[in-house]
Length: 291
Figure 1: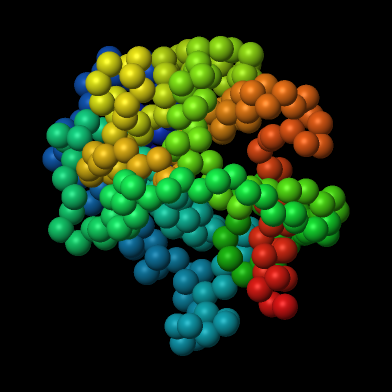
Figure 2: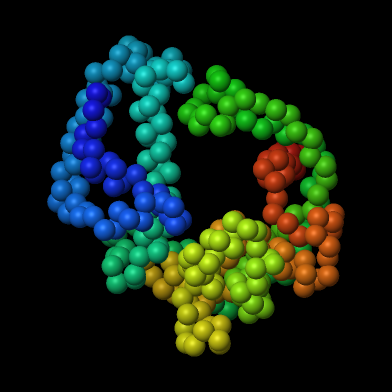
């Protein structure tokens, strides 16, 4: 393509899905296109992309579909941009589910063939699991991927390094709504000492007082909540994992350390796992399963 399909629309649509105060909030002052106009734009883009797939030489391999040599697109190919768009669209499926969940409940409707909620969501009497710990043995993990890895990768995924991960303990269950409720009741959202500088800026900018998908059920001081799913609001279920972002999770661990008189950065203190530790959990689990 030598020029934008619609430069005005593309400037509007590039706004991030989780805006901070620097991210184009002035766009709310302009006239946004109607649904009909956006649909027409989508049809135009769809036609362009479809024709690119049908006509670009990178997709003309002459091999049966499914064979290992069919349409091998390298990272430095022009067609890599299309592969990136396919992966990005998959990401949008996940981010869109969050955006739907943030919309007022009266503006969303469960699609006819959308999968039902898992039955445990409505099992409000389920017992919240006690915090228990698993020791992950020390081991090495490989971080990153090679250029010949047989799938798409973002630029910051390439390059490999071996990392030795010392032994550590990890909780056997996610932090539950009930456990995170203690943090909310304990004033965790009103005390900056638990938050990183960026986390506190985010909290104050969004005026957050509890997790995004908790819906107050009565006066705020009572700390009674329902839970917002994508298309429904359901009764409180304290056994479900708390859905929070990294700022909130880090603040929770700092609050928990203070509550239990654990010094920060000590081996026994609570914290979020590192990327290498998460990879080690996955590898150690596979090793245990194989044995």
